[in-house]
Length: 249
Image (tube, rainbow, N blue to C red; front, top):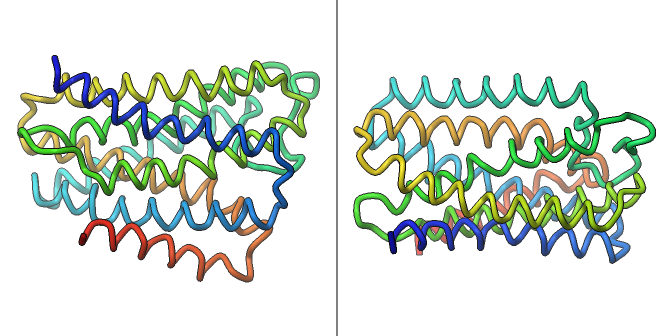
């Protein structure tokens, strides 16, 4: 039980960055190029974590076949769910400009964005929990990568919600709830998968990596490119190297 609570604590910590970013994005008037630059940095951090901590770890656990099946499966599930949510108003849930629809413009878009936030956050949190399996310590790189990337996600999305006229109670209730669910997902990742065979665990880890990679390409990089396209490549590489340096420390 103590280990499960520890997993939940790490997941909650990583998820709390969403609330931190949302507070900055909602109350501060952050210039769009700054939001884009932070989003590009977060994309690089997550790309590094997916490469070395998720896909690389999955390959070591179960080999190429479970890794490939898991990664493709995770990307397919994410993409299909994202398409469904996009048709209901959550297509631009991470955009900081005026792209997000208000509830008056598209009824049900608030609920769709809430489900979209869950779709983006749960795979990351499950992986935080599974990193504790086998009696080891939590993957500091994974926690750091999720935390760092969650700040610009919350910032950009909350700025867009403010522009769309969303009530502060909705905004912070949403991100606070996602932070709590992130902790619960990390507990689930640890508690439910403790006896999983290596091949299955590899597939689940890789599926989270595939879903996160699809999310980066579909939501984070477009937001970064919108206002920082001349610098996005350099900033993304810096984020990637930052996470890589943490993994080698």
